[in-house]
Length: 547
Image (cartoon, rainbow, N blue to C red):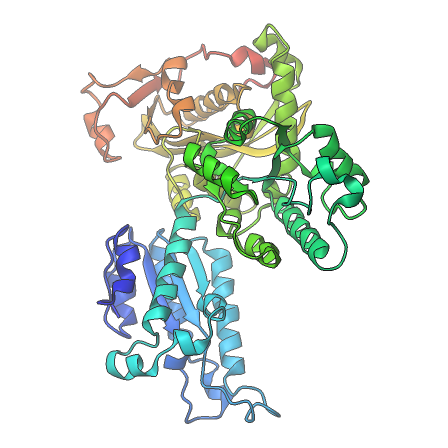
């Protein structure tokens, strides 16, 4: 299996090493803790078909669960557990009696999914989801099993490799945040400007039902926290009349977070939406039936993921519902309110553009930040912020739950997650500060980030005040920070300069402290005294200023 060219897709991106067949112990304990570990298991390899007593197989997977648990305890890196339940089954033999290993396999799956609930770095890859699309005869090859101990055909290997690749990519690259849709021939059949509302194909049997099912999938995606936007060459009034008046519409105007309905170039409209929502272009997925429009956007905005919609129309609902870039491993409580929060964001930006004195305006909108200790109830959101936040993120460290817990363990009082409310609504948990104590006098600002939906409120000023207050309480005299450019976090690049940190590029007195974090003094290393009194923009939060 290792020598097959199918693995080229992974080896082009990662250094891939293979363990010995069935040597699980070595794989778990000899793989460096910073490495991604992938374990591929076929139930066929563990089921004794000479024994028909299911009770004997209930505990057959205990050793695997134990090894998984030990690895997860000792390594914060992702562990991908890939499995297939395909087995030698008999239509007649199971006509009156269930599969002999039903209890064993069901119990094992239940246990491993339970393990994933408490270990956010465990990712389960059910290979049968992908295998079932093509059939076991194409995916499995008994000849490979007997000659190379590989259950899979060359084609099956390519599916396995792609499943691993997709999962790893999603771990390190957050899902898209916005689905941009055309209207004519995309949300409905026909052209509203030519056919009128009555002439549209929507809601009837056949093709009209496909468009309705497609809208149902869009609505389900919106409920998972993905923003829905329209970019359509149309008269805006005509489009909203369809939303308001056509009885077949599943989507309503309230489900649309942003739009550009005009006759301008679609790539320019998407750029404007990205600016309006304060999101990077790589957060957008573009769905349009017109190949010319898709080609233009793909050429002019390569960061935007343009969907190939050349498949048959009746495949659209399934294609969208399983589209990887619009799917997350989990949906948090914060995700469920994201559409409302971004609508509040848009209203805030429009109102802000109307005022002359930004500082006075911000004082007037009842900003109410709150710092919360990182706990079982919010650590999932803390992990999500680390994985998804790109723009206002000083170091863009993709921390898992385990690594967050490790940082907190140095001094729990220095770490917190931030919620914000103002007159525009509840913005939820939108900021995170992770600080690692280095010694009695120095702490390191490992993570300092803000969700893009609360940018423009100088919440970073309040978060810095809160951080320094906590340092003082712990008798820590100095806070060290670092900026790591990611290509996406330019908005945070001037944070240390704005907030009067000292650049340490000529400082030699704290070299030993810096080495504790394996850092080197550079232009991007800074320090501030915890005793500093004047923090820019702190007057905006005067009523919530830390004591």
